[in-house]
Length: 306
Image 1 (spheres, rainbow, N blue to C red):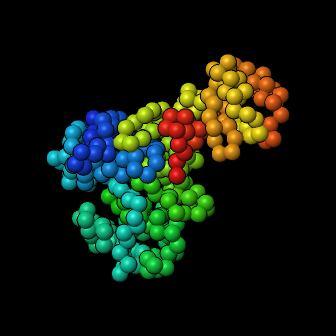
Image 2: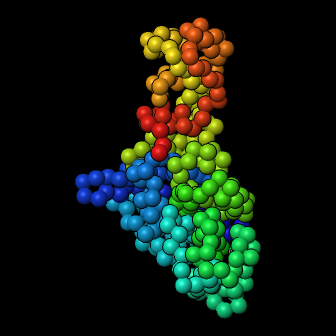
């Protein structure tokens, strides 16, 4: 993608009354990179996207996108941005095709050029066969693909995807992921908010983990798992907590009550030795698995994503 642009957030804060919902977020999103904002509902993800897109005015801090600064030059910046919000907000009075041609007017794309661009984008998101359909005839996955097509009308350099696959079935999510990966390959920078760990693991080059408006850790998915947890986890049931706690303490491992049992990290240096010591306690259920982002979030925040 020619003339690719980076986006940088500088110390973004947003308060409503006495409540700070975003606190000191700073990062850079490079062309062709997918950065994920990962956190539970209420963590400040959507507010952060609003500040980056220029529709929410920060209480403190600013955003630099290429030559433009937000707030202040939001209209110029948004001409090079696209956004997929949590709501579909498509126009039910227009067909699929006309949803695109009509929205293209916002970017002064009209006439034959608008029709050409709409056709290109419907082919990209595999909706050309539904061009004449009404919006309410589309499945949830089709609507999300149409919203993405609409966000790409102006050939944006940056696209914001705010929980884009919430409510979609597994097949529809996979379809959407493929489109996002194509967008990345074209050189577009993408900011993704999600509370789906598999989505973050699959798509993101880098993650910012948010809790109560603050970044509590960041890194690539694999780096976060390796650094915060290690390679493997044991899921244990039917063992008293004290022996497990003592064993974890001796090995420098992470230990946590979870559900009807416990999670214990297996030390990277010698996981088999600790596994055998856990087996010696004769648990009623014992499972060994790779550590994942759910474990990371649980260790850092004390809770799982809902």
